[in-house]
Length: 417
Image 1 (tube, rainbow, N blue to C red):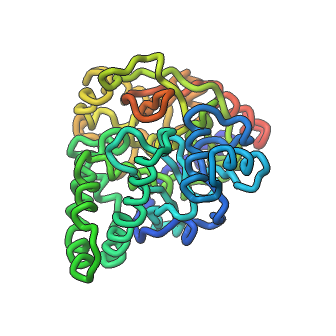
Image 2 (image 1 turned 90 degrees about the vertical axis):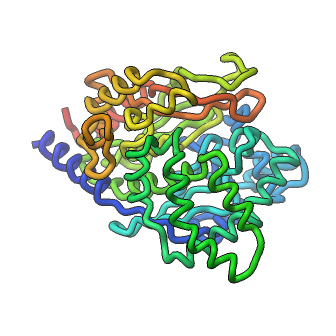
């Protein structure tokens, strides 16, 4: 009976993931729309730790966020206020948010507001900072980063916000479905999705420009220059999908995966929102010219929410062009993608891979299947350098320890075999 309960619960979770309908409804400062966000809150990625546990680029990003928000006058002041708890550190996922790399948000930073039209829940993601590899979420804060953040917050976001509101909302799932058929996997490759989204938004952008205000040229440039703009929308959409599947009693399906600078963790639908953690994975990366493997470091990351719902590394066979960006081969991509079918509840009814005869992407990671097979999720990620900034891209495979911990917690909760 217990196994039947789990199978039925997991089937229900898969249905909820497939039925979800994420729609971009607005762009607003996080402090205006994110429940629980306060003027002194800094969000960061991964399982939340005590402030003293953060190090390297993630620590630097948190300090940089506090300085940007003018919560502190100097680096030393920011550290003192974080030590004293006057600046409140929160995990992105705890506020229905999701963040790239260090994942830092502050109240003034704009976020995409995505509503799951099927189930009614909201999800949020902050903005892509631009094509410069030196970015706040890659652990860098200097005058150049500050100026770029100001430009995004004060020029780009208002234009996009007006356009999105004029559009009446933009359904994201149809864009994602088409992009999968055009060579994206919606994590490390978003070329098609970014261009389709720009096309969908273009009429409303023109109307917003006619209504007055500057910034149209800069907004179009950010939308189209390096085709990475849509990643934050993919993340917000995936968060809206995954959160709709949380809280199903008896389910052993993963509803979130994330890194901080020290560990990797998963959350499970049928358990509470505790992170079940394990060691950070090994990295297989293609580095940008001038960088070496000894520079690779961890500073968090939640873009792996895309893999949680059947995208990214779970749709590699749709995106052979990733070879140029993160290495690998078509055969390796196919083999890795096929292995993911061994650890999931089923196949996505909407996200499909042309190369696999339009087979649905593997969706609904089951912690017990991971533990039984020893096959762990493969994830496409950007690679951070110890001195800050992005230095390459590649893939990682999760450590099995976090899935073992989740299985043990499940057994204690349900008394299951």
